[in-house]
Amino acid sequence: MNELELKYGCNPNQKPARVYMENGQELPITVVNGRPGYINLLDALNSWQLVKELKEAIGMPCAASFKHVSPAGVAIGTPLTDVERQMYFVKKSPEELTPLANAYIKARGSDRMSSYGDFCAMSEVVDAVTADLIRIEVSDGIIAPGYTDEAIAILKKKKKGNYCVLQIDPDYVPDPIEKKQVYGITFEQGRNNAKITADLFKDIVSVNKEIPDHIMNDLILSMITLKYTQSNSVCYVKNGQAIGIGAGQQSRIHCTRLAGDKADKWYLRQAPQVLNLKFRKGLHRADRDNAIDVYLSKDWADVNGDDNWMNTFEERPEVFTEEAQRAWLNGNTDVVLGSDAFFPFGDNVERAHRSGVKYIGEAGGSIRDDNVIETADKYNMVLAFTHLRLFHH
Image 1 (cartoon, helix red, strand yellow):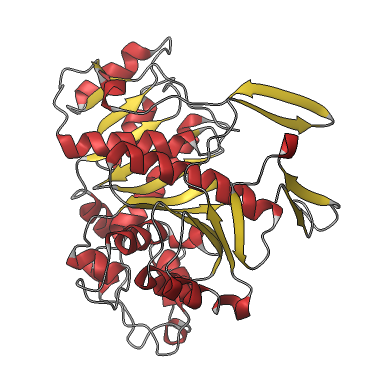
Image 2 (tube, helix red, strand yellow; image 1 turned 120 degrees about the vertical axis):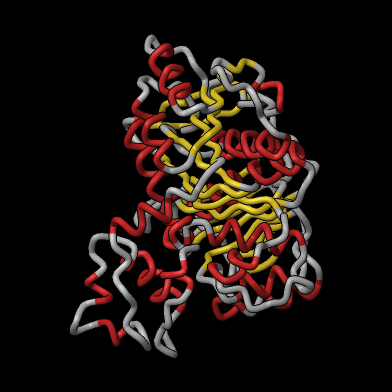
């Protein structure tokens, strides 16, 4: 099959819509179940490239959760800690969880508000335990190189049988030249085949030059994530997991702040004040996630006010004050930050420091590189210039 007709394009009024291969080539994707939409396929093909490249670079199973052609979460399949099991509401035992399942839990759990209604990608053949975890989430679809029979049976029951399940040929190699049209005009460029390896971080310009092996993996993860994230973009990473992704911002400092706020919220969810929340029985998963998000914000009274707390909680929680949150956030350390282009000023480093960043990879080349380096040295950070821009549009 070299063509797939779609219900419509980005919006219902955009018809007709299809995806197809030129020159009679076969599509590398097979629709196993459901009917993909235009945006579903954009998410699927971008997310697949990310997990495929990350698996090749790090050698571990990995997963990604995409929304509107940017990742909400990315992770590799290392075992969950006890705190992670609690913060992600995992009920399965550690023995039941496969590496792929661990990767999915963390990718989906990084930013649960943004991942609501996502399209997910897996680097491996999807097993039954991973499929069962996907089953309970609000999600539009999945792409992977294969599925076990048990996994397919589980996924086909999702969304009343309409869950989109795509299988991609893992050996497919696209043409080296890619094209797209905007306003009837055809754009053409060479594909971004830049390889993200440890060699990319050899030019360490800070006084501190020590990068442990596990931190190098996090730097690689950050850059591969950015390669498939709408620019401007930055990515905070910790222990094999993207914990804050800022995408599509016109200003880089706004991007750094947005992603930093997401990373902060990820870490705050590990605080006892959040882990010990007693939710009302029968509260939907999405309502619980939204309540946590609001509880950690300045609008906490919307879920914990005098007249409404019982709508969400069995017991009224204490207010998690700004001072208490700041004290908890001071415990977040050794965070990695990647940027898809240079930092124009040291203010990005200042904001990164507030979220526990110690290691930074960015392109370099700003006329204020000296200010950026000086700010990194002020906090004893490791700063590496990659000399590689990773804009993605």
